[in-house]
Length: 140
Image (cartoon, helix red, strand yellow):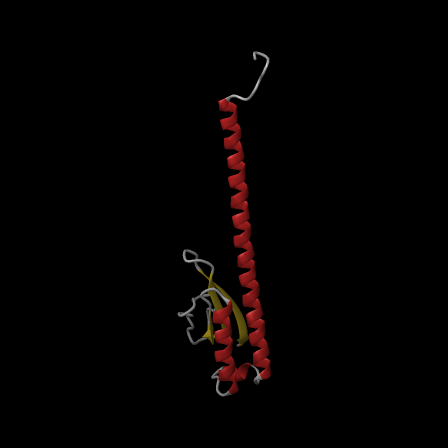
């Protein structure tokens, strides 16, 4: 049996380690791709929710009706907020006057009462990640 050749145990271990490293790299890339796809989906849903709100504004009398919503505008606002809360992870929405609209989070929208009328949509991608937001400026 002198003529038979094969792989040594060391060669098999090195090849196995290289294969495992390559597979771990592929798995990490797949996870990152899923995270990016989820973030893109959340951004798209937030943009669509704000477009939906624009439509609701147009149907209920324009931005002036939303400065102090009553009647139909108030009902639309409640319905829209419920829709945001169900569509976004830990989602929330607020319509307010704010001079610095790119701040706040769900439950604490940081509306300062100055500046223009804005609609804010908030969501969170994960426990350790910061709050994401998208803002629609309605009127000065």
